[in-house]
Image (cartoon, rainbow over all chains, first blue to last red; front, side, top):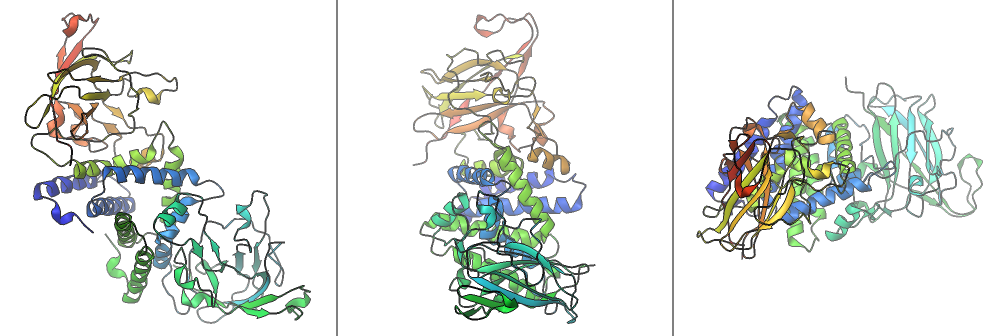
Length: 297
Length: 297
């Protein structure tokens, strides 16, 4: 960072005094956690401003940028989540709140495309519902950190189609490549989805402009979203990634963890897929055994 | 700040690694200043998250808050400026970019209520245009830091009415308590306005809710806005405040500076105001001699 050393003692004192006055303004906040958060916001915000010696023109640009992020956000698009994701703030928050417990499966970013009320399928069913893409068989188990099966765990899965879009990004109210199912008595699950492919995060908003201006790629490594919930366990929000995907090292939202990379085994046209399904073309299969951490007491 | 010391070394390493990856993602940014700004944003944002050990629920609340701030903002209301003002970020930016030069008049916050294209008045004219409030005569000079008069300086003035509202806060497109004039050949100016009175910043949005939740007052000390522009000089954005106002020490946006507090001399009903005007009631007068810093080369 530049600038701080060029500042005169008198000027530094004026700037310190502003910080002190703002911090003091929160002194009568009766909610101790909110007080701590606001003191943290004020301290780090002012440190940022002073470290970079923000100009008034840059301040105006920042106000305009944040306003544009807000205006781009609605029920179907959350540009502030995208901003948080691309600044690594989402991944950092997840890392802090999902500390490693035994061999529990690691968490990653939630993303902006989860929708409540997805269709329920049976084990072995298909979540694709016509989404464009190569069929992909996914199977595994849900266990606890002692290796015991978790029966009745609710597994939500969602993903982009081969054109790089989630169903909610289309204007036709479709529901596709999204669904939920439950583990059986032995903690097993399986379903058909589509083989994940890389796609760009939405770039038609201010976050896309920021990535472009800073020379960053908007591409996400190919992935399939999971959210696994079961009573007595910490809810797991995660992805599986595709081994060999060249984007694993440069994911736009910093979501990749080595432990979440899986082999997706390709099967050519004419081979017999699981569950007696008939497929006119190639398909793939992968396995993902999930371990849930206990709920925090 | 809490928490940091409770974090295990392994967890701290995981969190450090996320920050390093996010910082590295900006390495190919060719705009060196933007690179510096983004590194500053990332460094301080992650330090904040980790210092306060932000929870996922709090992260959700923050996303919802920022979205609400964006949705509240439009052509007539800028809730992000209000947020910046109430966190002292506006005042800090102004302090950094308007360092003291000789006896140049100090700057303060711009606020969200300036409007381009205000009515022009002659020296001695009235900016009130029917705004409710006690008439107030304002006069002074504009000089440079060597004491030489600045002729033809453009002075913009704007203020809230006695009900605490700026004209743009009404739905009827009125223009009132707002105008501009120019200094004469000797750098003198004078105009009628209304005596400033305290008012709350707009509290019907998320920033108002934040102030309420943190036990802060939304009241601004009474003030009259000035913006003074002249070729060859640094543009001055400032206020004058009213000596004796009990809100001087607790201004909601941290805008008060001792050097900007002025005596407003009260005159009872029946006394003769300047400029041959007839006033049916009391009036006040104040003087504000302005010193402009030279433009930065």
